[in-house]
Length: 76
Image (cartoon, rainbow, N blue to C red; front, top):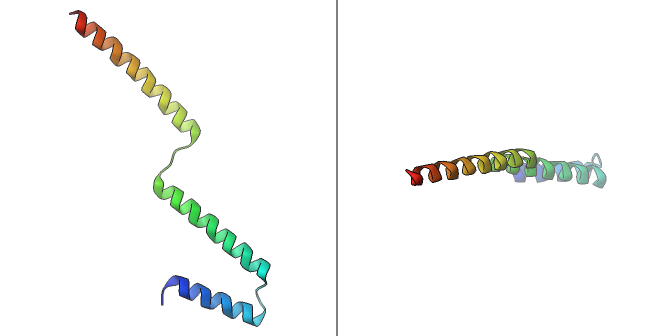
């Protein structure tokens, strides 16, 4: 039996016995969804806006240096 089936069997048995309310179930599903979203984002290896801005400035600076070097080379 795979994990989703185990999860649903456990949840249904808890609901049947009255241990778990619909609010608890909603909280559990929401928590699970948030965890899966974070897990997916981590797999994508995303960067923050701040990191992106810093990298963008570095690249712009390097491009300016490349352009200056190209101009010096073409003048020779």
